[in-house]
Length: 186
Image 1 (cartoon, rainbow, N blue to C red):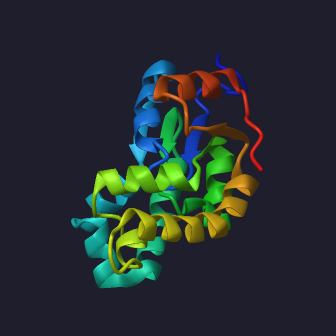
Image 2: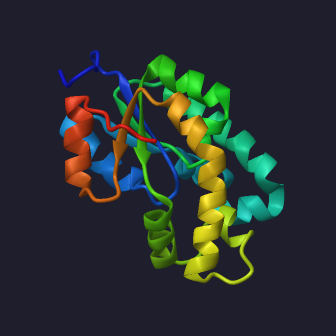
Image 3: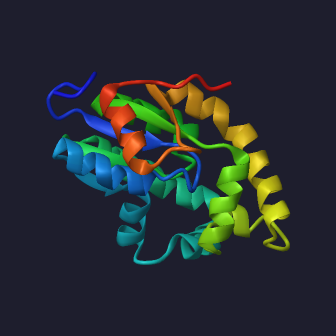
């Protein structure tokens, strides 16, 4: 059994967009012999439309209601690595559901690296795209800084373990998660 995990406890990955939750989640699930589920994918599958389309039709409030249902659905199972959307940790019901099923790992990512990854990924992130007039690296980084300032306290409060991902490969991040090692984050 890996560090700190009881038999088939879930591992929920939380953190900012572009932190690598999906990529790390795939590797971690393979390492643990777990199944990977992505809360954003659950939402898309159940809604039958993309996240930007959900935001356009239902706003952030509608999306967050769908997100809470997706988290509850995933957290009610066992033997999962759950890749969570970037805003999941802001909702106490989400955190409680995830914690009841296992360990919450915060993949911490700095603003500069997050902005670089988001710009490289291109459009498709409503919490960025709907709030920047021009998708320049500077504008994206300003928006990332705003969101991180708001969300970091929630990530910190939710986390049982913290792994800084900025200068690490996904495989290195997985190794730290499995070992149960945490980084200090200011």
